[in-house]
Length: 117
Image (cartoon, rainbow, N blue to C red; front, side):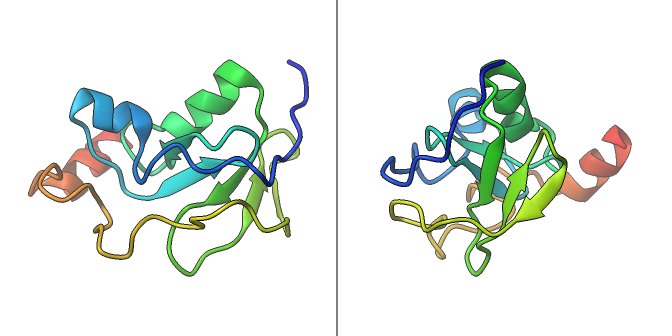
């Protein structure tokens, strides 16, 4: 894989996980690719789409897309780091619940995650 840099000019791909929204799924927390802006769900989510995006594209840097969080993660080095400001918005809408999206999260979501392990 070719290392892709952080691009501070690219906006996020949307306000929720692209793959979960396309399939009618749901997520726990959201992560933003710092290279292309792709929004994917975290590894605590069933889909783990942010990690899948890294595995497919080689875009190794992500930033939390949760309100009040500004940390970055480097998948290759397996460590967090301080990074630059990215193009707005910097997080999902605060009106959007976590887990989300509203109306798509099953009542037994905790049990579903525990079963996955």
